[in-house]
Amino acid sequence: MMQVKYYARACGRVQGVGFRYFVQYSAVALQIGGWVRNCDDGSVDMYLNGDREAVEQLLRKIRKGSMWIQVDSLDVIPLEDGEAPDAHGFSVKY
Image 1: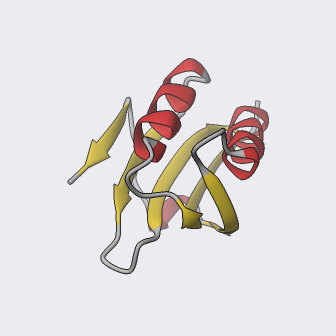
Image 2: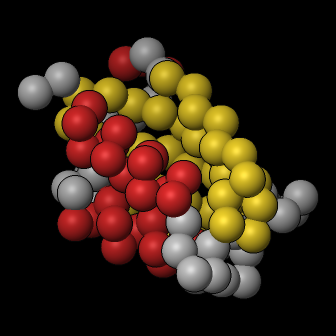
């Protein structure tokens, strides 16, 4: 299992539609650590770390969205080991 760490930012209809909880629920189910938070510009940013395939699966799910969530763009930046700590558990930041 290859571990990865990503910083990502989602733009679109991602605030006020349960997006952060959608990401949190999906991340916990896939055993991904990290956090998600709203940004002042209407986007949502997140830090994800875990098994590469699980994180890729989460990113696919985020891109797909839901009936209420519409992700127009998802920028994903891979991080090196020293750039971010391992996160255990997944939280919604305020």
